[in-house]
Image 1 (cartoon, rainbow over the protein chains, first blue to last red):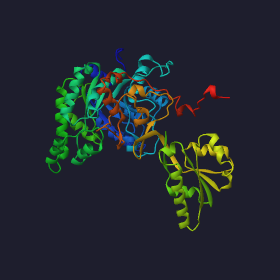
Image 2: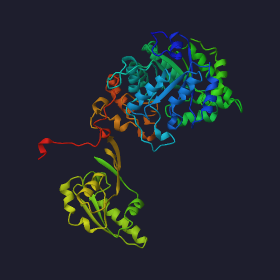
Image 3: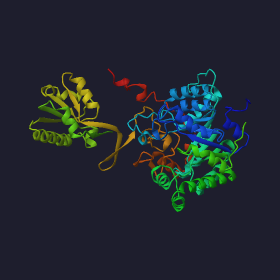
Image 4: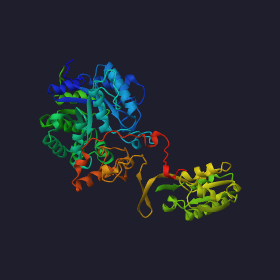
Length: 311
Length: 222
């Protein structure tokens, strides 16, 4: 393992070698169903560079992201362990960071987390002891300084490739690129964006980032989620805060005709991936094929993402 | 000030179902200002309770009092002569009132008639909003005079989350995104740079997380 790597993760190596990265996503099961988890992981093997393992996403209780990440490691697929600030205080965060490192998990994505009001336990007390920016800085401190938040020394610090999210479509728009720069200043090694549908707005956002030189300090992966149906597009447009689904995309999906909407959704995603590969400042694509893991190999193949670099 | 909302009538009726004669005590402090527990609201609740119990065929006798403040032993003392002559006492003060009463008069039962919600103020006639979380270490000057601890649903200290849309919080269209307001104010003032530093984790040891708080003014302690 080369000494100039921060974590030695596959994702880090792929990006460092200058390859266009391709990451996937997998939501842990609503239960202890390891077989089901393995079924979802299997199609992703060798098809993506790392797989995000969501942490009680949309505030719905699922198998813990560290445990599902561990299963993934056992299955020979590299996880990108997600941690949200909603459910843990700083003690639990540091303890889980040490735990995942001990289990060989090398990528970690730091997130605020959806408010519990959206989830299946809206009566829960939230934590938000520290925010996602501070979580990035905490992970970096633990890795680079080898100390806990209180500056006490860690006996074998974690090795981590630290990720963060960016949503170019949330408001206030003017501040979004500055929030991105803050996350990079806090210590993010890579960024995965919210699902992109409004390409015009994303082009503006990435141009701002490039003008500020942010893409040279951090690898920015563009978020892609293929639309499976017109209903999904309409739901995302109306119901998901901070999501920007232009009307012309909805119309395009509607125009595809019965039984062909999913294919049209994939075609749009492929066009996006094509453009991202040529777009200055974009270092890869994060494909969030929600409950569609089995379609990822086909999408990867058609997008020209295969074979993945073996480093 | 402290803001509270009246409990539903049925909840209060259930608390006092075994009583025939109660004292309803209002407070002239915050709950009077937010129109939930002053003399006027004491009168309204007394009538509502009596009507409801009359319908049940079990009339309830309700005496009314409203004292200066229920968070001060000096005023709590004023009901000394009467308080134990009732089956129970219902307080319309914030959560502090029935606790001071319970401590002062250990033989009586005190029920809360309001739900205490927050520290805040009136934003329009009849509408009150939370402004302060009582964290014990005020930092609003970093954020254009707005508190993200109390007013951001996630208490974020480093900018708006990805759920901010149209100036509203992801939890509800009725809730302003305070970070949207902070960023806009800083932009208008030409002070956006103030928000560029990464704010370190907050110490919550002065907040409720550090245990119940106590404030002492040495010069006043005898």
